[in-house]
Image (cartoon, rainbow, N blue to C red; front, top):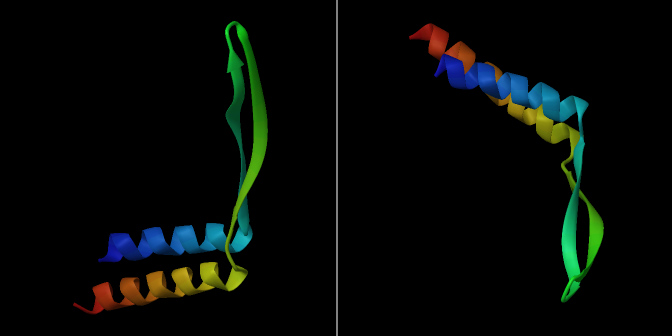
Length: 69
């Protein structure tokens, strides 16, 4: 349980620091014989900043609970 708590603390801090992830996908629009037209789309996955704090606090609770046993 302590290892899970430590992982949650690390993930929570990273979520607190980085509030979103940006990435690019490439989508095929037209494919006619040797001609191919692609479109690049920027995508964003975001979460609220307090979400990272909640995950980190849950990790701290798991570490403390694992220590008491």
